[in-house]
Image (cartoon, rainbow, N blue to C red):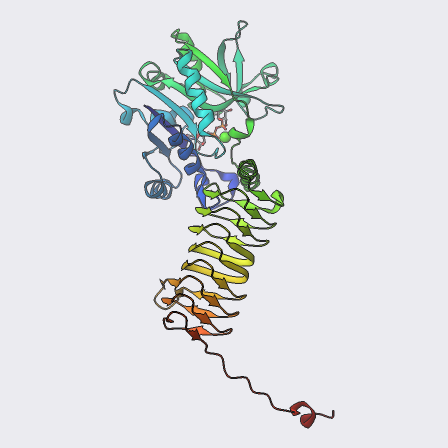
Length: 427
Ligand code: UD1
Ligand code: CA
């Protein structure tokens, strides 16, 4: 098993935000968590060292709470990417195996690419492999400088590059695989005599060459995967790219998505085939949607939603932490939260599960058994159970459990006053 080092100590000034850069989110999941997940999903790496610096405490708290196999290491102050990696020396001590190094702000990197990269590194018997990318516009990236025989010579940062070097369009993607036993010595020897006065991680290439180690480069197939987030505009673009990738996967799996441009589906949502997603839906968090469901238009799934087959969630329906069994419909203007809903249920327009008590700040459950019919504009005040087959009359406020097959109704009786209008006006 390999180890990873993920660099996440930088400030992210251009985000113009009080939130640390790597804790910005796409579908409520932080940028650094996407990177850690991709690394963990390779199945080849058993420990991640996350280098934290700016707002370290916040980043560390998030990682400890949400990410597997991950230990944070403090880098204070931040003297460059090479300095950042050198912070992991104590933790890695006598480790002799391979280490993969990547950045915490590239959420689109995939486990498949990382696996392919590691396999390449091993197949070449490489001591140091650098991931590169061919870019139409290489500005701001480190340039890959090759020898005449095509082998990797060095990486030159834009700020240190000559005009000729700047013409090179193969760039450093910022992902490395190296043999720690052989390369770790480099981190004690890095110098900061460059344009930025930083200890550059990229200088390990020259160092490894000077020691006659085997140095190779691997060119990534899809540049999108190394798209780094430096601004809110980048964040919006990355979210769109990620969403597009997810939508394409669902389309391939036989889900019908009427309008990919206005549909948002989180990476942790499973959808079975022949389900139709109508335009303008936002599906966030972890969800499981069965076959032949109809979702939207304008539906909002907020996470922890499980829909069995043939469920309909219609327009302006919000669902959170709720399980719905097959052949149940909630077609219009409804909120279903913290609920368990049976099969063959009809939820009338405007139904609300009142799951939250703002005085106690507690959330409670609503349980609706099979074949229940909830009339329009009803409020089900949780905790409450509507037993099998019961009917709730429209406009009811349900504060007690309702027995099976009963009718529950709290509506004021209808009064008709004949000719009232005529006697009160000039008609
Ligand atoms: C770096 C590479 C460049 C490459 C580019 C790819 C170096 C010297 N240059 O440049 O060749 O093309 O990435 O994106 O490595 N960080 C720390 N501690 C530090 C400095 C940085 O943790 O002291 C982290 C940052 O938070 C960031 C990552 O390292 O996640 C990259 O740092 P950044 O300053 O953005 O490097 P680039 O200038 O983009
Ligand atoms: Ca960068």
